[in-house]
Image (cartoon, rainbow, N blue to C red; front, side, top):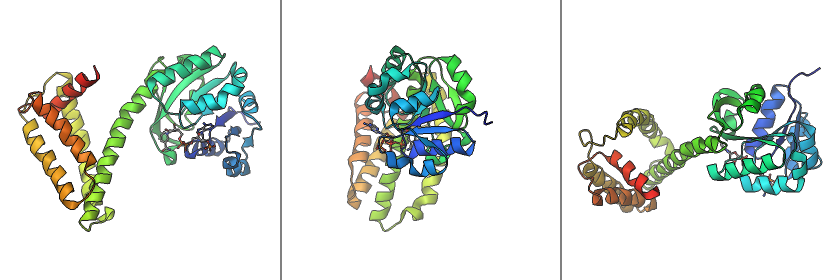
Length: 291
Ligand code: NDP
């Protein structure tokens, strides 16, 4: 008899599908449900069971993985079947803001279920690999008892009992991911305007990205110590540099929204009197904006 924990997966976008494949690879019995039922076809061929309704999917197993676009989608899917949440452990791997995940956790708890928040840090191709990582937060005991099954999907990084914490760590990564990738798209557009392909600039782009961890560790220690001295770099130097970037892009005729936004932030740092400080002083500016 198969002693592996059976699991339900609701939401079969690229992520949910990768999760079902990972569970099937490890011989877990999997029940699936998706708004667009046809997205389950290939999974059913591999042995997954397609539930006829959300109620059926929830009733099938104690452990239920949600992989939806966001928490609004969770309410859209689960509200009509909320009576079936009692006794279920809902591992919500849909991303959203920390506040929305806290409200979602309260809602699930009010309906008799247990909610664990998750934030997956890898694309679908990283699912099923122990070196990949997912943030989790929520009640520790159910997390620990289901950890072995969750580790089929990726390594697990439990951040604490506040349901918002996994989402917070996820969002901290995402603000860096989206802005870094936008920087890369800008570089590719600039290269293309000068007759260079993405492949032509890949080695230089990779070298630039690979240099980042040393900047992060150097500046994080100084930021935590409140040090923004201009001994290594000065904001005034950065100001001149980001203007060169803006003008290079403008001269090439490519979109300048991103480099102009960067110039705007540096300019505000200059106006706040940080010209002779490090450009890490921009963190102070950003903290004040959100205070
Ligand atoms: P998608 O948005 O492509 O698909 C998610 C699922 O949500 C689909 O099954 C879709 O159903 C369903 N859905 C959306 N809105 C509704 C609704 N109103 N009612 C019912 N079902 C709905 O997401 P992914 O699979 O790419 O990702 C899932 C989660 O994982 C997201 O929160 C994403 O941010 C996160 N994530 C994704 C990564 C990636 O690289 N893809 C990486 C890390 C995290 P239907 O098929 O019917 O449209």
